[in-house]
Image (tube, rainbow, N blue to C red; front, side, top):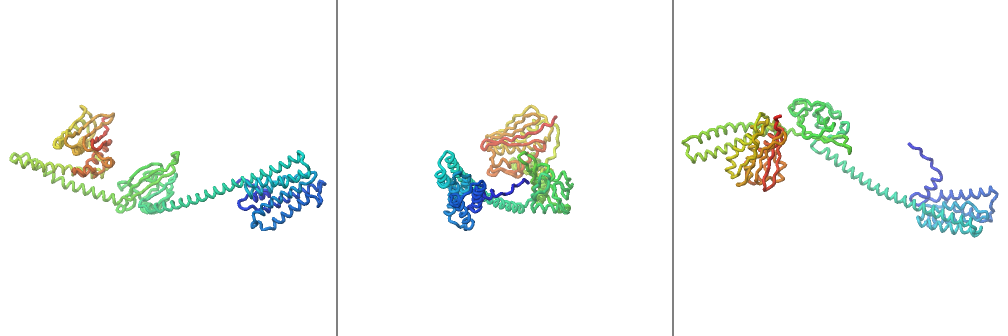
Length: 553
């Protein structure tokens, strides 16, 4: 701590003259009287004493009378006019004290009453101080002692010094008041800001505890800096013996398959404390396998302007009911699909046998074709449901990779789509190279192309065209299915590859399907290490583009 200078009498005088509110004249007046008496005493010691009949003596008596009056009067209740009269009396007394043939150095004391006038009246006080000093202190001395050059210089000097001192105090008080007002305004603004901040803090805490998601804030060291009530409930399940409050503590927390206990490095909180960000990381908590809860965990890091890690925020969502409902749904779909496929396969087989029988009349042949077409549609739908259930269970489709020529795969898909295109009045076109070898699952790619071509034909009005293109781009193959159909509305594009999603146009047109085809296409492309994307313009058609690694290196 730094050294603090002791407060002096001079500080008290300045404070009495410059403090906010009505000034206290008692201490400044006492100091003023003391200086006047000191001047008289020094002159007496030097052999220049004064008699009671002389003017200086009258001036001293006037100063003493004013001092006694100030010290005994109830000054906080005095009228302002009496407060102004005090410095004027002091200036007149100084004028009397200076009326000696040899002169007096007491003239400099006019600064004290001048300061008081500047404090009391502000800038006008400087004018009053200058005029009063000139009339009451300087002019009498010139009249008595003579107006030589030295006397005139002294008279002008004390007048200027008095006026300047009063003006300096007035300006200082204006600045002080301005600072005080600004501080008051800032204080009000700060109080309002603090009140608003406190209100927001209480609201945030209420929301923090009310949400049905476990939330935790980690600091830069991985300590739990804050957590809500929902997370405490989850920690009780995962750590029945209590949690230390640090990221990476090992407890009853298991991986997505609900079998292997997570290590410290696998814990979502520990990964987040290292700066990793992720979404929908599935973990299970609880020692009892039958009552374990599934949590979906997401994390975001907190960084300063220099990108240094300051902490992380994690959200834990209980998805147990959703996981179990999804598993039950997938199991149901798989069971039903298998149970339906067997009789449908028998139906299509017997229909084919009847269609090949020479004794079947033509009219029955037409009806059998309708039965066969709808049975095939049902088989494709069942296949889509089975694939969808398989994707959900395994997150990616199992592939049977082999050396294939993608030109043959695309050509086979075009040949299979040709009857549907003729029936719809749509022209099928191709833009294929002579050969393009790859390592891939030809069956799955054929399924992908069947879906894309079927969608393109279904969305293209009669007279339109569907084009299949194939080309090599570096180490990747690029397959495009381009149609001149109705296009896809912008609002539908983000959800186009979501399971069971059907676009607004498909719903309006009543086209058959349950919205699984494009989801399966995406899974097939991603299982091959590729991706699928779409470009579309309403009224002008769509382009579905599949990029696949050739895998022949």
